[in-house]
Length: 125
Length: 390
Image (cartoon, rainbow over all chains, first blue to last red; front, side):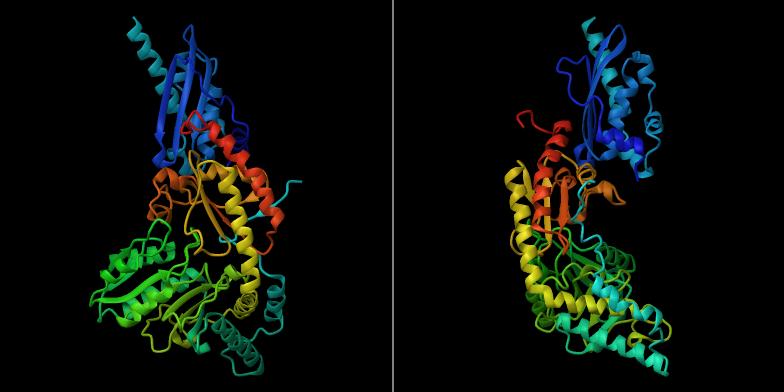
């Protein structure tokens, strides 16, 4: 059902955890639907220098969270905002069709975290 | 090599080698058609009728003729419900069922609702027991059928079938019981329990897949759906699957003989597993009834984590189980059975179903109890729902 890459990210998820003094936090999903994820980012000179995630959900939800953090780490905010659900799925060698919509939410969580950072910055100014 | 512990017997069971052996001659040597008049046909007919007797004995049916072989539990449930509905629609169009039925009952009822039948769904309590009072209140002059599971394979709760049977019989309503998850595990007696129709499946008793049976009490008015040569007393046309039927009958006979011993052994393992999990894992709960439950069924749930990731994680340790989680089924909704016992969506998503079988030993339960707490801990550490103090 899942590709070897999905299983690898499920077995050994990268960047699991929280960043207590995160610059941006993004949560998407709903436990009622069975998927909920939070992404934490640390930003320096407009670049994502650290990123962590916490996810409640199925194998695909965990693997896409892990892959999204890998894709985003080290990228500028502009580059990271361009990461799509399709990019994440592709980097994992694909996802089962029924998982594309319900569990592939991490790219949205990343965008929410970036927006959260930008909002906070605006307020500070 | 990783150890392999298979505890998903409600999904599929290995065929008993003894049963397999009994079936073999019917593929290659005794291949006649039971409807043929020559001796090959008569040999097949003899095997077929002996099989009918064995299956009748398992469920306490008085006449072997009351047993019709089908392709499995799903076909038996479809035939029973649609067959009664269409044959008796002049008498009434109302059917009563419950909120915890198998898909093959639930979706058959939904189909009939689209055809103009009225369906009432009786709720269950938090432990999964059907509310008899509410069931009684649903009965009206148009009610022709009550369809209830003997025990849901998903939560294991055994229903008060005899009481429901009395109620149905006093009101002159047919009672259909889905005993697919039950037959061969606890004693069933269709006469004592006032059952008019009963569905059973072969694989659930370590027989081959693709075979099942429907008990139809003598005098029950039912309409067939498979028309043809009139086999199975006209209820289910088509040349009989003799090897499969012989397999099912042997499996039924063996299960009946082992009901007490194997039942006791499984109950012991089941309780050891349930108690072990509940005592070693915080915020873990039992789904279904603590005592009125199938001997092989341990249904549990864990807060803050999701069933599919539990299954995948346990599989890495060679432990094979199932879940009531949405992601493992074709729909995104959590199991209707788990919602029916009052679980919130997120609780239903965190459910895990262990169904034990012959191959499982005490060491296997020990192994699960050794592995599961760490797996739950790891997934909880990853979950944003887990409270900080855990």
